[in-house]
Image 1 (cartoon, rainbow, N blue to C red):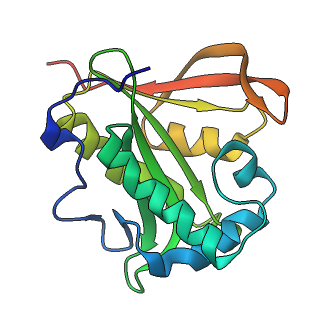
Image 2 (cartoon, rainbow, N blue to C red; image 1 turned 60 degrees about the vertical axis):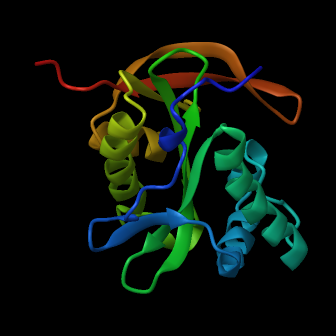
Length: 189
């Protein structure tokens, strides 16, 4: 499937990089491989992403290079979620082009040592206004496995509403699972 035809300026990184003073979003760097190593140690992250389940420095760099190519291919924008004070990468924020006009997708993960500190909620709150404006979106959606209660809380705290369930929508390791659909739309005037 061809990527949606958005204006070229839409598929670029935010400039300046996004930050709330505690959490930031920025382009991945080759020095972020430790974040990829930690993500690969979590059994859930590699299962639903391209994070290598068996980490090597070369696989970590290959992952980062794939994230850069997402912008170039028109697929979307993948950014590192970082602690603003140290600039240490602790997760990933992904905004994807959907085939429907004015609709985007959102995905994220946080490495286990940084969980439970509001990092994901802060990162989603940073990403939403930027992508809604930059891509002229009328809808941003996220798909969550029903047992992923933490992610459901993140989305709810960031203003998303649960809309429904897509049965047998996700496939991991040849197994199907449902996905809960969350979305956010711009406020109506």
